[in-house]
Image 1: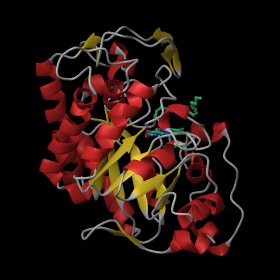
Image 2: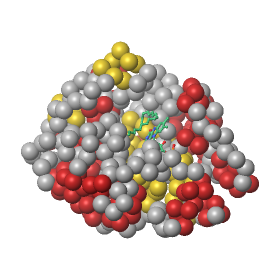
Image 3: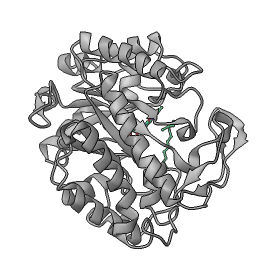
Image 4: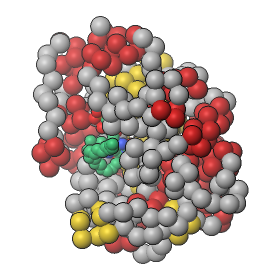
Length: 349
Ligand code: FNR
Ligand code: 8K6
């Protein structure tokens, strides 16, 4: 069964993956204090170059995108150089790697930068920054239309920087309750201008970012991650959100992106307002025509079965890749995987 995972897969005319196993983006908070990727990070990614495609840990597009310590950036020349070292080592091992472009929106903390925390609306989240519990989240400012225009331009510039750094493409992080997702969900977007209210307005920011990034680097090099079910850093979703995602996916069907990637920790979660059996992957498959990446607490065997049932086309694995740098080799030789445990996050191996 897992043979299916090991077959090559053409994303489009430009990019063919050597297998259908993707390394999911995994924040590790191990960049240096200038948010530059280190030599250890290069070795960590190169060790996993057997994946059909590595998606980098989320990488911030500009200073106010930061909500966690020591996450890498892609906006200074030093950061671009650091990433170039990573992409070269991955390429030397025969791998491919995309850069996940990230702005956390209201999950940002001014401890990390000078300036305002921006969100879709002035609605904050409860709680404190992980690993820095003394920092409580603040109420964001609603981004003005001029600030939105600048954000869109900064995503496009970050994508250009990523290509300059040698990445094979970029994945726009539109999932998991961060900035783009904050525009898509009703609980975090109560604007009454062109970016709020009806479905087209709430999807506008996401589509402007996609179009600006595509214009800069080409659709064949652009993936997008979305969380149609609200489950992380957001209040519960509802039917109003579903109308937004229905509209957004219909629009994306005309964009010819490299792939669409579900953002979720466990695909057995159910969101009744998404219809069908309530799973986020089934909802995306129903509304999206292109390459779909499934994810969320799958084993390789379960993922292969889901692919053979045409539930999605490619499988991303996150925690199993932290525990098993040699994951693909183990799947090939049918060796058991080392189970993931949270203490593995302490070190980059
Ligand atoms: C994540 N995840 C995640 N997602 C994302 O889009 N960008 C990121 O930077 C991160 N960072 C991250 C760090 C850690 C430590 C974990 C465990 C998860 C989510 C990840 O990509 C994936 O969707 C989930 O981990 C579910 O897949 P697995 O781990 O069950 O295969
Ligand atoms: C994406 C960046 C931040 C770092 C992430 C660390 C993640 C830790 C892992 C587990 C968290 C699981 C949260 C799942 C939410 C489910 C809610 C029902």
